[in-house]
Length: 119
View 1 (cartoon, rainbow, N blue to C red):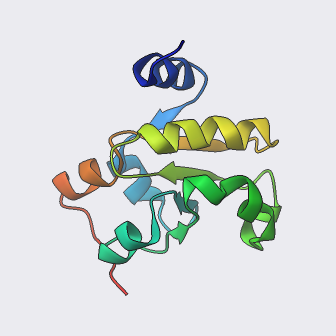
View 2 (spheres, rainbow, N blue to C red):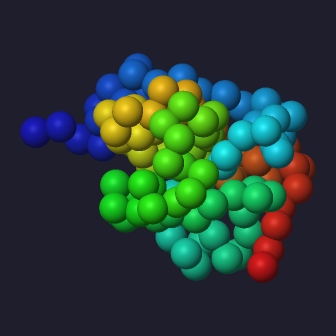
């Protein structure tokens, strides 16, 4: 039986990660997908981020007009980087060719004092 730590280690070995500062430098040129739950997203999120909870990712990603292009640049993000690492693997398995994970998630984003949007 595989525990979450091993599952995350395997996922992170299969994906590329970038820092919150690298994401901030690219805002407006990339698509950020926040895989946290709606209440987490509503409490604050990256500017322009799209909220698709991880549990619904496979069902909703194709329905989003921006995400229909499997070659668009996508940054996956969650609270700490774990859920989004797993979601990044899923996106790769679904044929997305330019998808990365934001290391440290929203927690690292806030720690770096980067801008946060609230509805």
